[in-house]
Image 1 (cartoon, rainbow, N blue to C red):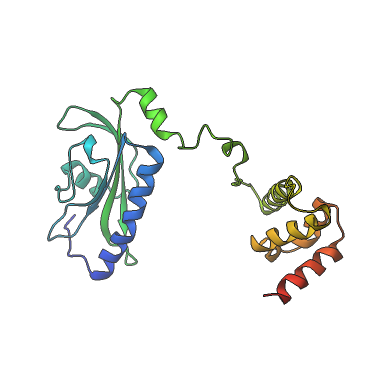
Image 2: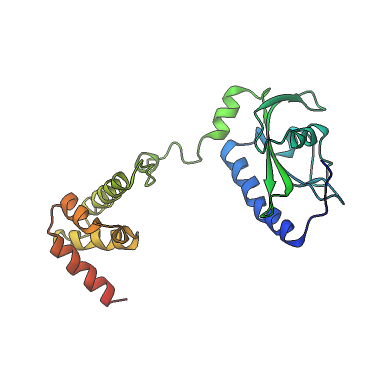
Length: 218
C-alpha cells in the first residue's frame, strides 16, 4: 500500500486520538505500550506513545515493518499476534487502522502487552487506585442491559443515598430524591415519572409537582 500525504483535517483526527492512547494506557497499566503511528508519506512515524519503556521507543520512532504488513492485509483490526522487540521482550500485540471520512488509512493504533512482566505486577497495575477504599462497593456506575434496568438502578441508588443521609429531614427526602434524579436527566425518558413513583412509593402527582417547582426556579 502506497502512503499518501495527510491533510490538516487528518492531523486533527490524529490529535484527537492522543487521548485514546492515554486512556488505553491508563486502563491497562505500565505493562501495555500504546502507540499511534502516523501514515503521512512525508514522515510515517510514532506521533504518540504511552509506556514506551517497553520497547524503548519514543515519539519520532519509525513505523515497524510488521505494522506495515498488517496494513496490507486489508483488515482494520488485526487478530492478536506475538512478537519480540529489540530488548528481547515477548509482546502480545494488536493493530487497528484509523481511517478518515474518505475511508483513507491515516494512522495505526498499536497495543503491545509485555508478556514477560510478572503476573502479580500486571494485576496490581490494573487495579484502580481506590480499590481498597469503601467507595468501590458503592460505585455509582451501573452497566445496565436495557433502559428499564438503568432507570431502576439509578432511582434505587439515589433513593438509598438520600434516605441514608441524616442531614436531610425526613419530610424533604422525597423532594431531594426527585431533584437529584431530575439533575441526572432521568425524567427525559418516557414513563420515567411513573416508574420513579412506583420505585419510591410516592404518587406520580407529587413527582410532577416537584418537577414543576424545579423548572419554575430555573
